[in-house]
Image (cartoon, rainbow, N blue to C red; front, side, top):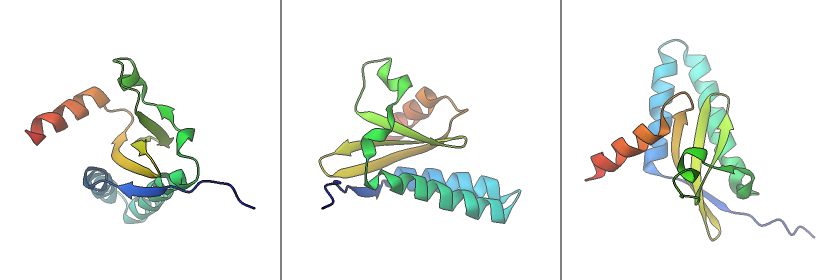
Length: 112
């Protein structure tokens, strides 16, 4: 009997946009690399289907007391998500060399 809980993985529009921007940038150098990275990032995010708690709490957010967001890393990209009941919401895909605090702040400003 398989007791493994399965979660539904949902990609927010913001994460899809992030992914598209990353791929557009990589595509300038290599279409084949862009396709490969796209597949890898989607696959990595979708691995949260079985055990979403495997990601660590986002350190930049934890340092200011926000602990409901987690991250997994693939190569140089962070996939940031939250778990709610039996769903995993992938919210952000970002280059880990970028300042996450600045990116999140800009998104908050743009929503208002």
